[in-house]
Image 1: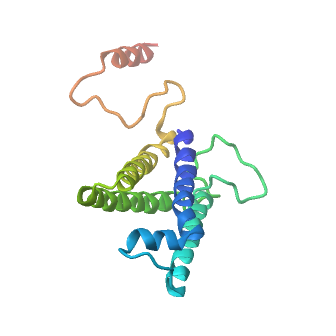
Image 2: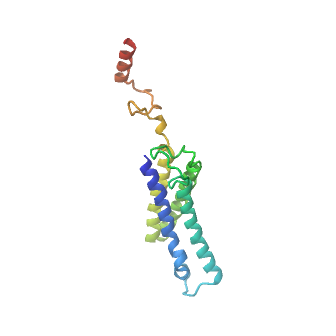
Image 3: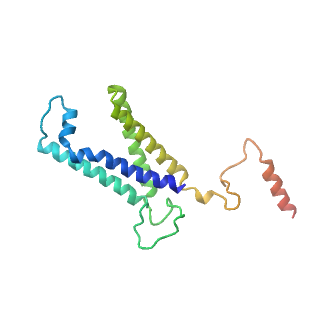
Length: 179
């Protein structure tokens, strides 16, 4: 389960880095794509583009650090430990929820723009954002549930046999009581 958790945090950082590269390297190209006339950027546009690119990179790095994917302590704990409940990463769950909401919001925005313009870039961003938002939801729901898995049977302890009875489990339980 932690593989998906690590994949999500590093994919989020990678996607944010990929989005920030055009903002940092070529604000003129972005202004040219957004504006009907070709012109040079103003100092304000240049500043805003580059500062937004730096902010997106910082958010990606903070995601990796706050979720505990890179340990910030000098001692190494058990790598199989549950990272969502790990005291070394107390902000893991809030970070996952916030970045998942970010990906969902950006994906929704890109989907609306893709419907309006038909631009291929918006379609790709919709798919990437949806995948990352889905991974975040999966991590929030399931990546922290190791404590509810039985060590003996491997079954989830939270399940019940409400609509159907588990006859085999009842037989085993009755056999243990007879002993």
